[in-house]
Image (tube, rainbow, N blue to C red; front, side, top):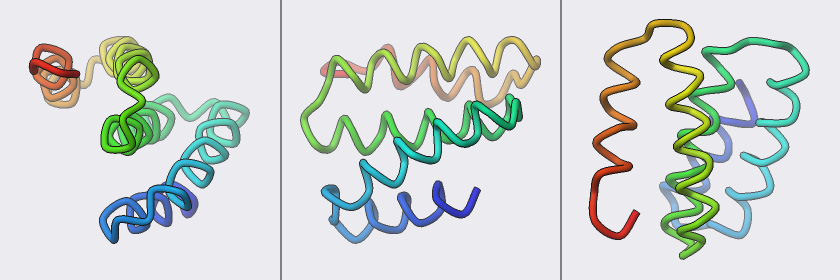
Length: 91
């Protein structure tokens, strides 16, 4: 979770060159811990940073994976949030 938050802070500060590696590493770590909720949140944060960076295809894939995980754990609110992002033109 610490790397996700660091990546999100980097993203918010406009430091995408720092945010993307931190979020990518966070996804790998969280995946190994098998924490589905944190993994989905981290993928969502990664997708947002990728989108801001202009990596639209990668962002779309990360959002799709986050959506799948949110649906798997029946987190309706987060799933709806990601669906809206996926339906937004340009994402």
